[in-house]
Amino acid sequence: MDVEDVKDRWRILRDSYVRDWRRINKNVASGASTPKSESSFRFSKAMSFLADTMKPRPTSSEPSSSTIEPVLVSSQPVYVTNNANENSSKRKRIEDKEDKNYSEEAVRTAVVNEPAEKDEVYHFAMRLAEGLRRLPHRERAELQTEFLNKIMEVEKKLELD
Image 1 (cartoon, helix red, strand yellow):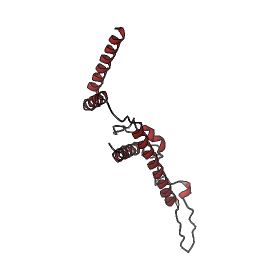
Image 2 (cartoon, rainbow, N blue to C red; image 1 turned 120 degrees about the vertical axis):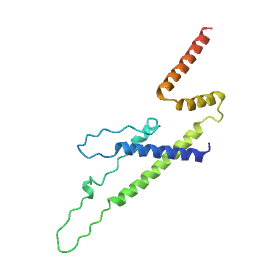
Image 3 (spheres, one colour; image 1 turned 90 degrees about the horizontal axis):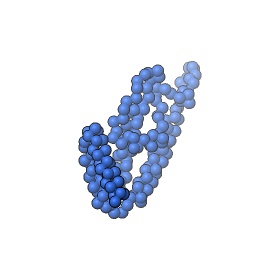
Image 4 (tube, rainbow, N blue to C red; image 1 turned 45 degrees about the vertical axis):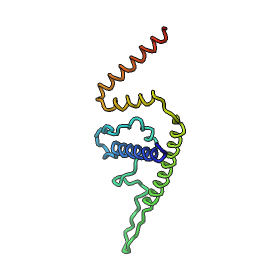
């Protein structure tokens, strides 16, 4: 995999996590007792570190006090401009740049820390992981337990000899 592939994969994973996070954490009307739904994103737990960097967006149904302008009653029309949208889009662009810098740094770190050559044990483990992912949860858990038990047996046998 080259750096561009890793960047594309990271972008896809990050965007999928953010969409799922927003779906779960969307604002609910005040006083509503709807429980949060479960995450449908496969890597939700693994990518939960991203939740610290995300802030809920203000909704149009709950305006902040800074966006409410007093209206004067007079015979002449009054024009009110709202700079909140301009500031919001500027802030979003800055946050997007920060996100991009963070993701590029994460990709560089991952590429640098990745071993140059992978041995046959690594490839065997990846093949096992691929097969395990296709199994239902219960069977996968049982098989993982069997693998670990077998490894422990062999390690104990080797220590005794």
